[in-house]
Length: 113
Length: 114
Image: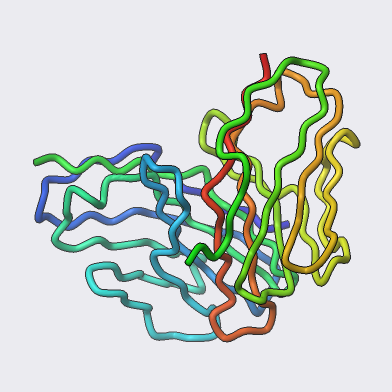
């Protein structure tokens, strides 16, 4: 069975600083995808970044990047130059070939001005 | 243009009632999903339909019945509503086999059962 663990229920970071949200997962699949979704107070689920498990190169989207350690089954999200608009719940998720997404329990990120 | 839309956005109802939440996507995707997000923000998949056929059916009470009249719509009907059904329900869609494999989420429907 797939599981996703986010061990940090809440985190805070000073504006303009860098923060890393951790995520570990477990899957028996060899082919899968990993995602980070952001859920701001507006409740909309927004895809932040995705990673194909077969790719060794870490995905990057502007200020967002991941540290994908396949052997360790770790998929952390790094946010550089944090902005007030980054404040949200962040969900790590895996998806296997059946397109079934399993979400972690989320990390609430606070941005301190 | 709205990619995945849900109606209503808010739904307040009495215990025991029957209610429906509608979902429509205009992305041309073959697969649609329903998720439930509880008060602790935990998101869990309920159902998945691929081209109107049920693919994923998690351990959800029989009171929940998804209905897909066509591949652009996946409605969620809930019978005999209970207090524990109060949650935010998200619809999503994706195109299996696409390079991105991303799921696009609707805005959510907050259901409150009194």
